[in-house]
Every structure is written in structure tokens, then in C-alpha cells.
Amino acid sequence: QVQLVESGGGLVQPGGSLRLSCAASGSIFGINVMGWYRQAPGKQRELVATIISGGTTRYADSVKGRFTVSRDNAKNTVYLQMNSLKPEDTAVYYCNLVVWGQNYWGQGTQVTVSS
Image 1 (cartoon, helix red, strand yellow):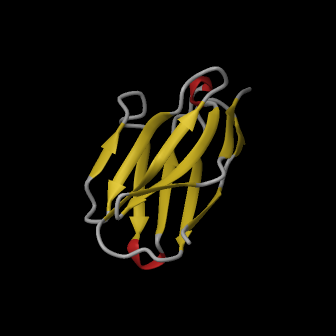
Image 2 (cartoon, one colour):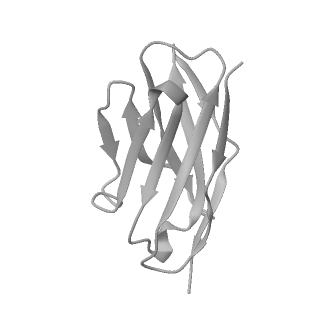
């Protein structure tokens, strides 16, 4: 059984930075995609950034140039470095893993950007 455990959310002022981490455990091998999605109150869940096991990345236009997704394949861990945070980045951030056609989600971590 695959499990995803997130950490690193919290409250930050506009312009600040946060780093999210997500560690995956279980039967994970081969090509897979790890990434981050977010859901703000009253809105649908949206893609933030993804990274394939080979390193190819994809970003939402709203975070390009501010967020960086990376991974440590040896640790089955994905990171999201968030800089220049804006109030509109406030949301619950969910870790996602797609492997062997199966889709897994973390429990979510709250990120609040407010002064």
C-alpha cells in the first residue's frame, strides 16, 4: 500500500517562502510522476507542479518563476520550494503520486499567506 506524508505548510507573510515535502512509502518503482496540487476554499483542486522520475517538470502558469519542484528518487520524496508567496497562493496543498496507472494523494497541508 502506497502512503504519502506531507510536511512544511504554515502561515507566512506575503513575499515570504515555504518549503513543502512529501515522502512516499510502499511499492514504488519504475517510472512515476510526483507533484503538488492545491485547493482554495470554494475552488476546484488545481495542478501546481509535477516532476517525472526522470526529472521533467511542469508548472501552472500562476507559479512559474516563483515555485520550484524537485525530487530525491532515493528517498521517494518530492519537494516544493515556494518563494514570493502571494495571498492567492493560500490553499490546502496536496501531494500526488501516479505510478503504474494508480493515483495516490496525501492528506493535504495548509498554506496560508497573510499579513
